[in-house]
Length: 67
Image 1 (cartoon, rainbow, N blue to C red):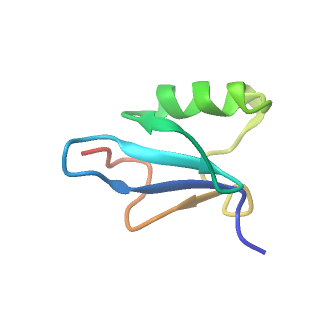
Image 2: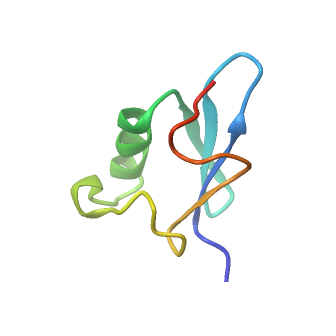
């Protein structure tokens, strides 16, 4: 089963598109943005492990690369 949250590769203009179950949440420029998108999607970012592959799929590069 695929992770419900996908952080797509960095865009040429900066930031990374974030989707939840195929729905676009927004363009994140760092982990704070991602945490806010998760909060808006109903998740508690204080209890989310950003390295949990069952929850978040990082495409091409991991959480240290945003541009």
